[in-house]
Amino acid sequence: MRQVLSVSKTRRLPSWQQWKRLPTVLTAVERHIVQTAFLVLIFSLITLAGALSFARRVEIPAKGGEYTEALVGEPRLINPLYAMANDADQDLASLIYSGLLRWDPTGGLVPDLAESYEVNEEKTVYTFVLKEDARFHNNDPVLARDVLFTISAVQNPAYRSPLISAFRGVSVVQDDDRKISFILEKPQSAFLNTLTAGILPSNAWAEILPQNAPLAALNLQPIGSGPYRFAEFTKDKKGSVRTYTLEPFEDALEGAPYIERLVFKFYPDAASAIEALENRFVEGVSVVPFEARTQTGQNRAAVLHSPLLSREAVLYFNQKTNEQLKKKEVREAMARALNKQAILEETLGGAGRAIIGPVLPGMEGYHEGLADIGYDGEKAKELLASLVTPPPTQPDEAISAEESRVKFTLTTVASEEFIRVADALKAQLEQAGLSIEVITVPASAIFDEVIAPRNFELLLTSVMYHTLADPYVFWHSSQKEAGGLNIAEYQNTEVDKLLEAARAAKTSEERTTALKSFQEQLLADLPAVFLYQNAYGYATARKIQGVEIGNIRIPSDRFARIRNWYIKTKKAFR
Image (spheres, rainbow, N blue to C red):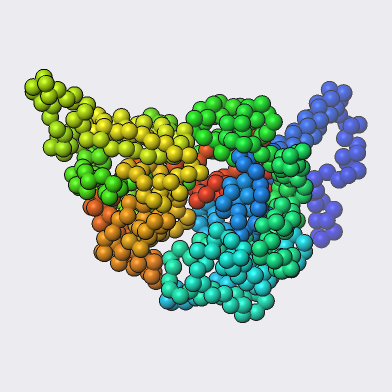
């Protein structure tokens, strides 16, 4: 039976020998049909495979390309000890050097050279551990002694570093090659901000005398540990630097950036830099003033970025130079007479954000429910009515209504932005019944001639915060003396206590509570009117991809994510 079954068993599929004989049993028409069907099948399979391959193929960043940007000014000291005094120096230093921490648009302060850090409960000891693979551009490892050398240089008056005040009262102790501690005399809530300063290689700088540091060649041919390294620079016949070129540092932390060459060209002012962009001598520009933003936004080869800066425009009252300003109803009337949003729209094209108090949105301690006096033109006129001397009715005593108005001088910086804003303030205050004379002072003289001697009645200027608002330097009574930054010479014992508490706070909640109470008291006293937060104008070539800037502290923060910028792409399968 098994033999019978094995012989009679049928195959499900024809054997290879049977397939070979298929053409002999088909008619000519049938053979043509089979051949056509076979070709259609092969073509369909090839098309399907191609479609699947194309669907899964994506473009990803690749190394290569060159980007040329116009900087306003000229580099002199590309050195963390001095760079903050010059925008061009600060821009280049941010690319060449790394600090223990760095600024990230979304993460805030994040570790850079530091692998980790700890803060004691009293907020007086900050201990950092360095990354083991951190290296300088000359291939030396980044060690704790380099951090110690850099901070010691900042603290040494012979170096004349502008950062010296930030590290006053701070002791630095090297625990081992990768561990270093900062010991503060008293808590400083904003201390971590200072640790974004770049670290110098001690081996390269140790033999240079402090008094000779500003003259060292290393200021123009720096050695850092950042994503880009110095390549070359060119000078003109007068000795001015004309171009400055950087190349990727292949051993950079988090990997080398994609763009192979960054070339910077230097211009005396923003107008000439914008002109170079229009004429395609450069592909980007470091600062686009508000009056040029419409024109730059229409440039098809460039993209205009407008991130918000941690910078606020403020109208200060000097109650010592004009008796009228001692009256709170006068200060309140001025505050009510000002339509901040209208000023922002009319003068800056809306490039910014109207604000209420000294702590900006997004900062720790921002008071979302802070009560604003608000714009009320009619109420402003009512408050000022009692201050205006009515014109006499007798012709022989004729005094014009204009002459009877209370007069104030409004001093500001002689820049396009502040001149326009001052004119808008003048128009709104005069509509309320005051007489305003605008005085402009060059930026180079505003501190020595106006701020330090408190030589003003009304002052329109700006203040800059870092990642963490520290209003202490602007509003604590200890800062009101000449040279301090308490410009309004404001004094309030309760406010002093709140600002001290904010600095000494051990938790974010404690700090926020103190700052909110401070803002409520400050606005109740009205020593100033907070107008708007500035937007920063920056342009890059459209060919530059991956540019994400976000909110920034200072202009050089635009390079915070330059590792992600790219020009070239390559195909890859996902």
